[in-house]
Image (cartoon, rainbow, N blue to C red; front, side):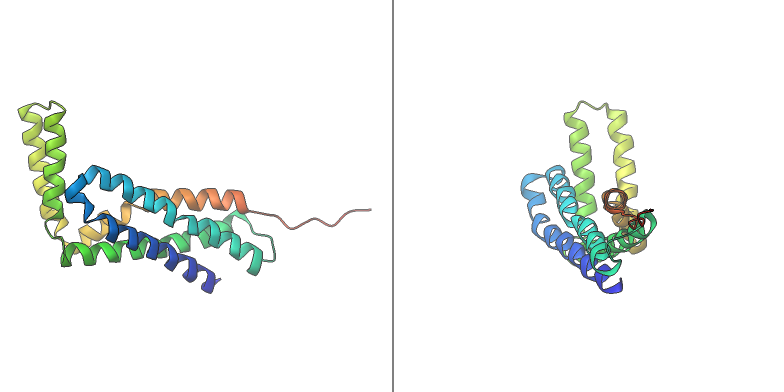
Length: 176
């Protein structure tokens, strides 16, 4: 199990990391909201490795049968490795290359609100909230926690669906 979990988890991490590295430079050109769409689309592609890994485990290690719980455990471990790679990549990119990302993100949120017709009071409240966010985001532990939560719903959904679709009970012997 260990080999399959690491293999597919590292592939998922590599896909997430590569797509993050490719799309991050596009944020300034096309806007952060477009980057979010591309980022989540990349997660959808990367976490396909959960399904592939669980199927590989079922077919090669588990003899063609797997319970929902076993499949969920294998998929969850693959997902956790993929998420860990995503977080590590973001920590390196953020603290090494784009320490102003939180400020740019905050400015983007405020500008979207302004264009949507937000009141001055709403803009002031959001500006304060975004300033607090940017300050907190500079803490590596808080940054890592926020970053961990980004792909978690996608990874969890893939894990649940994979476990449900790929579970297979052993064939019961024919009774005569």
